[in-house]
Length: 506
Image (cartoon, rainbow, N blue to C red):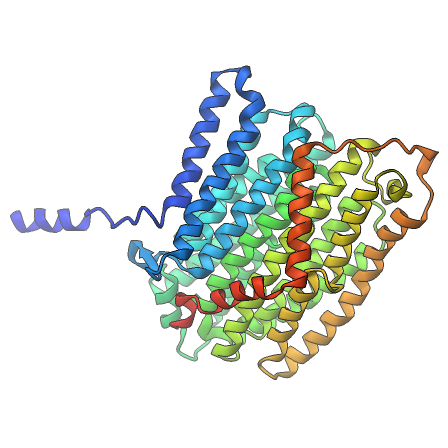
């Protein structure tokens, strides 16, 4: 009896917790509780809810930095199911900073609209917490829990304009499509568990590295990729994106297009390059097709858009295709895998600054025009030259024009594609180059309207840009310029991601 009791106690022994490693998550939970309490106390605290959220997000960034400086190496908990390494820390920093910029975009937008403020910021914090957990999860269960934690608040945020039919439609489409994609992904995960007997990504990788490709295993991998294909809005799983982006509050559109997409890519990198590494013949052709379809269809449909938010929705689909491209050749060798991870991380970092900056301008211009039509940007330089210059910077950065940050992001992807020296990589690099030229047309069309066309209705009333929105614009513009002129700053981060232990050790 004593032996059985001892065995039971050992089975329920508390796991080792590294509180320094968990500090970003702990700070985010504390921020959630502080904002929740402040919202409960009464209306007198409502003006400071955005500030409390922003301070909490910046506080969560501090342990990310201290962990990055620390020489303790890789930290692992829960039997390797939760890992803090260079790869996860870079992505955590991205998620937290992007959420902070979204709070800056939201401050006046939410305060001046008919919205529930406290719940809004609570949902942003909760979704960010899910993304931070996703970056460190190395277990199927952890990835699924993180995905739901980041997704459920996002469904509600998409429908936050509850008296707007378009916003309700956006939230409903996002929710229904998301639930369907999650069910497909979860079924794929259950098949993988049934085949390997484990939920740990590293152990799954060892079990699947046999050279055999079972039909059930192929189906499982396809189902998991399809589930995350929805999250990153890859074609043909992108149908929700245009309507959701247009109907959601614009700061949330920015949040979904950057942070939510980046979290999906973080999961895809971990699953593909750890768990599915030995099945490259299954997932490499799949990613090749998804990448080509996303960048081509996204760019071609964007050419025909008259609404700037829908244009950026299809632009986001195309950008997702660029980011997916390195996965199409990552299974060729360890060098190809390392280069692919670095290229994807670099692109996500630079894309976040470019896209968030563009949405900051969209929010600022809409304060005057009350319209998202591209024609409403006519003559913007005549009454808002600063916004016009900023938007031009972000547009041409997204197009990959030097010396703005976007050129280095695309260069990193090109390098990842040609490194293996395969026909698939070279052909994908050519297709990416052609699509970059196509994208330049619709980005340049917006710039042409801002600089060369007359002001609609001859209304040259200056635009009043709130301080928080100005701060977001300045921050994004500086990052876009600096990373274009000094690409080694972000290139070094890409190299850190390449050397991340969970990937390099397999």
